[in-house]
Image (tube, rainbow, N blue to C red):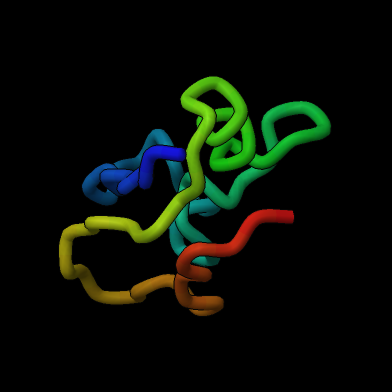
Length: 68
């Protein structure tokens, strides 16, 4: 099972106000989180997120290596 590492996009108006509250991969895309869709396609588990340092970092933090 491969480890998946996601890359968080830089803050942009396209993701406002959602990106301020949580990582993009933790947003819903239909019934699944974006993270869950990538895990299903790749057959792996998310182990971490690479993201740019920016003010207003995600309030809920990042769940590492979890799958729901």
